[in-house]
Image (spheres, rainbow over the protein chains, first blue to last red):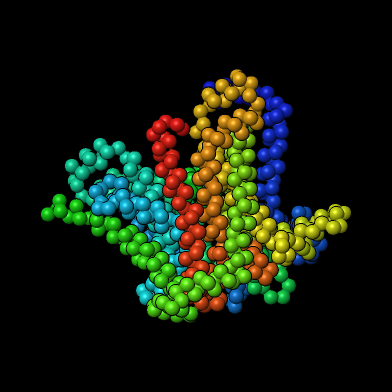
Length: 295
Length: 298
């Protein structure tokens, strides 16, 4: 169809019948993909009277922020009725140390494995590759005991610790593969020059890490923000992340269910990663490709 | 002195990662496997039950909930495989028709950025019998439309499959797109010159050339399915009854709700065993791919 166009800069060409069919099919697929988001958005802006009419795809007759306001300030999750805002701030407080710890550990390990002579580096890399696939359930209970022993169970620190543990294998492999491709001349010159592990890291490696750091940062922000299981298992009263608050809010609601509030709550939880995705989509794609083994 | 320190610091820098691997992964796995051979209930007992070491496993495989979980695992894997097919079709179309590539890619991938809890809320709302799609279709005149899938044990799993295909198709599309772009464009020219039809080019040339990509996708999918937990929790919470239990859900339930440590450990160990069975082909695939690359077969 467009053999020349693939090899050479594209020339504008006529839209042909087949082209139209393809675009129509893609557009229909795109609509299917947008349906859940669309339904969430319109429902969150309706009032309950209109929702009870049962036209799930219709636009709100009267657009109202009421459900959003209620979801953020007043909705009940479990016993507390302070809205999702608490969960939001918990998630932010979890996110920061989790990001710093998980990236710091894997970055330095990846750097050491890629550049320096490490004993047993080969077997260790293979071991990391294996551990990247271990189901969380098999290490869950021992990690609970470990965090209890460390005296941090139920705190934000425990959640950050577990996120660091779970992310370490994949992130280390990503950083290691990135640093391995740094030209060895640069490294050799740097080792001759100063020879210090940390100075080379700070002066050579860190300035070269901009791109991979953004990719990993986005990968980690989305996976930590969207995590439920670690948060619900290791979080305590007042430290559970937003996803846990959302899940409690939509499942344990007593009396009549306010669907508009539930949808607003779901959107509030989804907005931070969605904003990152739409603004930095290119890096997000690189991230999921690099972290593909994370599954 | 400085030289010695610089040789020591790389090894020291490995300390956190090595201790995580040894304690949090290997140690924990060993501990859980040990627990699966004991009679531990709420609290760990370290004495292996030598008389009947496999008692937890015997109980496990006699448990209807576990059998349902294993069946659902296979159903979910086969159903989710649609995401690979769908992903390939989308990637192929996007690759042929370059117009709007960025737009379509962005739309197909956004579900991946959203928490599965949110995905569950959205799809549960669509499947809501009172106000959801069923009601819309019925009020449009299709009186017998039945989309109350989530409350029916025989169909609840299909609703979960639809949600997870929606969630993950974009991921496979991205992998397939990368694979398609790696294919030498001269093949297209050659095939078209020989007058080979479009579908035959795909089925006889492109898909066989992408066998590594397809295999990688299949293995990633299987590993993802074993881990499936959030989506089940958010869509059905295992119900109705036990009809949507999967091993990941079963294990957490045995631990958190039943508080039966030995039993949950046996289930977790079986999850690890399933992972290994899926994982082994991945290792072989990597080796195979490297050999093929060396021979220049790719």
